[in-house]
Image 1 (cartoon, rainbow, N blue to C red):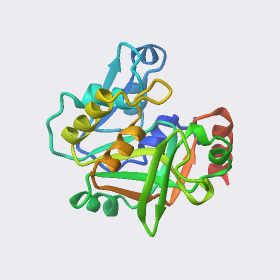
Image 2 (image 1 turned 60 degrees about the vertical axis):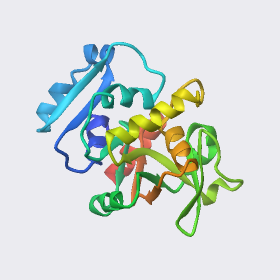
Image 3 (image 1 turned 135 degrees about the horizontal axis):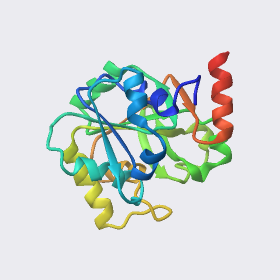
Image 4 (image 1 turned 90 degrees about the vertical axis):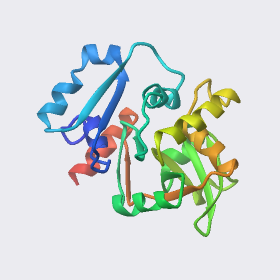
Amino acid sequence: KINNKPMFLKSFKSMPLSQSNVFILNAKIFKTYDIEKELIKNNVKKYSIIKLKKNTKGQAETVSSYLNNIHSNQPIFIHSCDNFIKYNHEAVLRYLDEFDIIILTAKPNIINLKNINSFGWVSSKSSQIKNINCKNKASEDPKKDTVLVGSFIFKNAKLFNKIYDKIVFNKILVNNEYYIDSMVKYAFENGYKVKEIKVKLYLSYGTPKEIRLTNKLWKS
């Protein structure tokens, strides 16, 4: 837990208000952890829970398994369950009038820099993206780059599915998985308009060490 709240709920608080909130998880987890009970207890409205009966080949396939049947033209906001971020919601959404995809990034911390190949990286200059890499550095000086925080906004589901189909067709796998980081890299390199937004706060709790550190920071 983070500050005595389930970590997925802390992560959920990072997201903007929405007409529909979708939680996707493995069906095996649902058998041992009642996510719906926590949602009701914390007064979360307008949600649905997708239970996957088998493991997917990564985050991109997980999201695609749901979006494949969605035909709405509304923006799609994707967020990981193991971090908390702060940013200007309204400013970010305004960029969707001009850009196809928005990626949220943060300055690298010591954990990121010691584990380069565990994160997605973005290299930019004068607010212009120069390179995006998945599980590999984006330049020769990662300290000057930014880390993908696992939050992405696509203009709509159709765009997400189109790019996902491209990385599957081209077999763009990293560690035998399909990553949304790879989708964004493909989109950027193939003419789609991608905007980077640096978050005001990024707290990651994907490992036991990070959970302990985040809880200490939350209490301070």
